[in-house]
Image 1 (cartoon, rainbow, N blue to C red):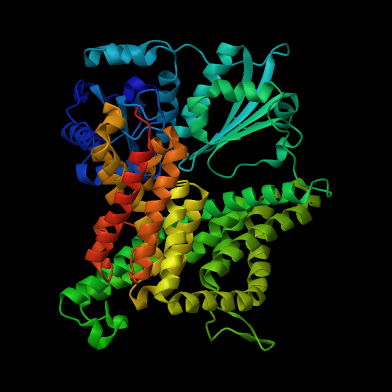
Image 2 (cartoon, rainbow, N blue to C red; image 1 turned 120 degrees about the vertical axis):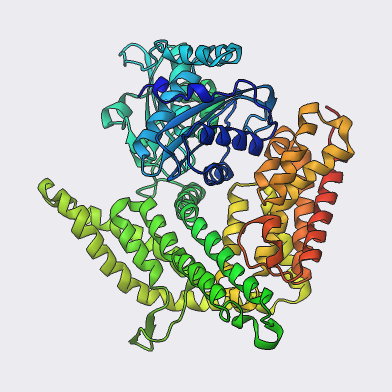
Amino acid sequence: MRITDLLVKDGMIMDLRSATKEGVIEEMTMRLQKCGRIADGAVFKECLMNRESKMTTALGKGFALPHAKSDTVVGGAILFAKSHGGVDYAALDGQPVYLFFMIAMPSGADDDHVAAVSALSKYLIQEGFLDKLKAADAPEDVVALFAEDREKTDIVASEKEKYVVAVTACPAGIAHTYLAEEALKQQAAKMGVTIKVETVGAAGVGNKLTRGDIARAEGVIVAADKAVEMARFDGKPLVNCPVAEAVRNPGELIAGALNGSAPVYRVIRDGRFSVKERFLYLEKRFYDHLMSGVSIMLPFVICGGMTIALAYCIDNALGVSPEALGLGSLGRNHSIARYFLKIGNAAFSFMLPVLAGYIAYSIADGPAIAPGFVAGAITDVGISFGRLDVDNPISAGFLGALVGGFLAGGVVRWLKKVCAVLPKLMDGIKSIIIYPVFGVLITGFLMLFINIPLSGINVGVNNFLQSLSRSGAGLLGAFLGGMMAVDMGGRLNKTAYVFATGTLAASMTEGGSVPMSAVMAGGMVPPLAVVVATTLFRRKFTKRERGSGLMNIVMGLSFITEGAIPFCAADPVRGIPSFVAGSALAGALAGAAGIKLMAPHGGIFVIALTNNPLSYLLFIFIGALVSGVLFGLLKKPD
């Protein structure tokens, strides 16, 4: 793919007016619409912002690759824009962004989308190329730079050179995967190291590592934010890190894989490892598989929860009294409210099957999806008093779907081992018939027995949450709110959020979930605390840090905790305790006051879906104020 064929020369913006992430995206989107490359700028902007909410497309080095696919795109296009003053784009290195490449592709153009990002990445990672782009004065200069023959960076293996292999993968499988690939290749060329990089992207696995590649390699680098095949690296020195680390510090990763400092990766088998080693290994694998399911499930939960909550609000606005008729009556009285409720219930109904299906997929690939979906869909049947009971729902709920996903994945992996003795000519039949059909049957019948104890736990947890006293709810709220600020998007943050969304489904008819309100309050505090600290203690922060205040206001109010990450990364000893204190306080206040929330995301935009909006806002403000003051007092002047 040639970049010059996609560049919109007549639409390039050589001096951006906008100084914020959302402003840049809107300005570039409107330019694409003016050039006739998209039909609806507002729709495409929403697609871009949704993509940015998952992970920033600015990994560092002063450039960003906002990208999205949408039905509103009229043919593929890349729009270039340049900011002379730099934009705080929430880049992972905390530095301003000067160069922007907006990639627009029609829905379904997965291969073209990946190819465009991959081809563009090969240019941007080249040493000196970004400086040339910054110096370009006219669109013709930009086109000319991309028209030049790119220096070949693919490396041919040599028996005499040091040799490493790598895997890059990000949750979306688009930009970060290929940027990391190019960064590793470029750095390896400078260091005189031969490297082969496997990419696990949206278009599938590219440049797959063979057994021979792995056997020859002196070390392995796995730069991934989702589960990848790891057993093949058994016995090799292995550096394991997030995909962004490969873009920021490729030299350190390659050196670590070669100099003997990387631990040797071991697949646990035959009782060779200690209890601690087994636990750490299994804990990581469990988390990777769980997050694979949760990342696909969350859009269904968010869409379903917010749409159901809107149905309640519509009925309430049209005069239905929940006090007189009960909360369960909301959303069922006016035709428009009933239709919103139907849409929301449809989205919500996919929550458990999708969670279980994609956990199973992460464990055992495509053949496990059908057994996983079935496991998630039948969490309400079981064996009762020795008899099959399919008519009286017992509801193992979120916990049942979680266990069912792991069960389905395990069953299909077992089937693969059992069927390994079958002739190779039956490989097609195994993937299409044997694994899914027998996986569904075995998993389905095992769920009959598993659902009974899990339903008891599920009912017990829900009853416990409903019976909590004000002090008990406050303590739980403090715990969940504090977890949201410990790693801001990491494991503890995601664990608290997943627990809260699990309680939401069972509490919609009761007016919402107290844990959900505590989690959202705790997650909104850190970015807002940054605003407080940079405003009250201006002299302790750089001009660029003070300038990030507006962005953190937007991120904080939108429940995007990651806005505070650059400040925590720069000063974690003072930042993390400060933010945890305020988040825990906000969560405790929300819990103690019995604040309930009916939406799993949205921040201030769903504040009306709480049972006490003004108090909820006050508690978030108090938490942000406490965190901001603590952070400002503890921070040393920059």
